[in-house]
Image 1: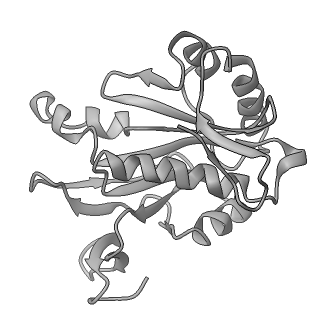
Image 2 (image 1 turned 135 degrees about the vertical axis):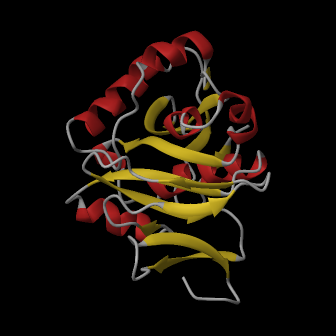
Length: 222
């Protein structure tokens, strides 16, 4: 299924196809060079796309790659996955239940000549919409420390930027308490609730480190 950006009607967004791997790898190189919006994906995504199309099998669930096209040219892409490291930190019998709790925006890139046209925003919205469709509670992205423009970009799109090492504490849809953080590897976690009634608040207890928690919108403001 594809959709068209109303602001730029010649841009079409849909799920990647086999044969898109080289173009996706080129866009990924922008992120590797520090020109993309987020950090690069840890697997050779171009090869995986050529083998599987836009739905890539993972140890838990699947990664989904949406693309933006102008005519036949692929000008942008977003790759989102279940947070494999977070899932793997739980007991094995719990992992299948956690696949759709969160979605991680692994890679988001737009070709330089097509930026500032709403393409990145539209790609992110497509990734979020897919996550909602499978029942995810939150979208998360890791942003390199010091990448202030990227932080502003995500903040303007409804994300809360955590301090380095600051976790999100939440309860899964199966009633289990859990937390997710940036992994203390030089990044910040950006988090967005995927429903219309949840906001995030920072709590700084006197006897412990600060953390983010979800509350209903009647309990606090974003």
